[in-house]
Image: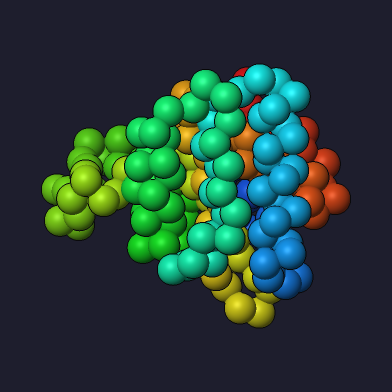
Length: 165
């Protein structure tokens, strides 16, 4: 199995297992702070957003990030809002089928980016209600930072849900 295929399979597991019991402004803030702590301790130049669909609840831009990261956050988050799937999974599937969001769905690149770093926030018995997004690292690393923070928030072991090295 190729790396993209393995990643797609593991991302589906991550999306199934990283489900919140509830989601509100306080949980969004805790998740955003956890991401900020992880990134800050590692001196990562990232922008971070936690949003309920249609409403940003947490945003931080760390040292070394650039204004363009905010645009990437918006565009990756739009992919999750449209498909209720990780932006990285969508990008990998498109890559495997040799197509793009523009070609397959007529979605403009100015508003949608199928690159890793945005992950759906699912609530049990409610479904996808928002997303958490990181921009500033290579896309696989953006995705994994988000997964690590979600695992931390949910009290889950990150190593069991991490993408293979």
